[in-house]
Image 1 (tube, rainbow, N blue to C red):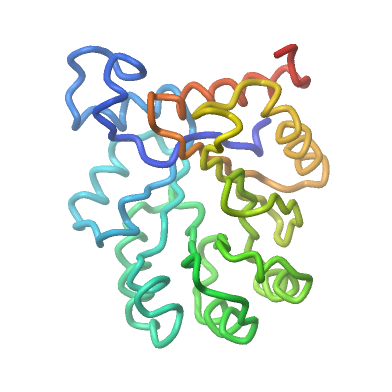
Image 2: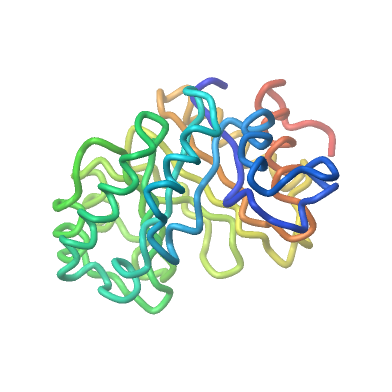
Length: 246
């Protein structure tokens, strides 16, 4: 499954000590350890604040060249500016993230839950983004899940983010040459994704691989240290080519 990379949203969680990180491991060494276990990570902290140049360089230097970063776009752009008049903010954000070099693979743009469908706005925003890195858009209002939206995404080669969430329906419409999946946790699965819950997703990812699409998959259920365990579980399922027995 070389085209499918599975990881977690974020890595520096104190409550992952002992559950994932060895006892006594320093916080500064967590990313380097993480990279020995999982091939990709989604950086969530970039949503809240622009990291320093030194911080971004440190992330890059902590991982091997084969590692893949996805970064979550700034809330200044998505939530405060709501995609309007954000050209300068986008340029600043992308310039800073470019310090990740070839390890930067995707930028995730998560829209606010109260932001309803506006294809013209989405088209304008995506048209202003650079083409040096892939982009994915996560919608959090169901009004976006229509063919017109997906056509805008296809026009710009941007991926529609597929989610497992209590807040949005599952929609597996692909819109790019790659797919992007986020597991947010659901009440049904009680904080973790065991094999029965992952089987449909594993089949979906196999289908995407057969269709020639790469996949970036992230578990956001960090509570209890479930995310890295679930990422390893899905990876194992994909490698053995079957959903397992539960």
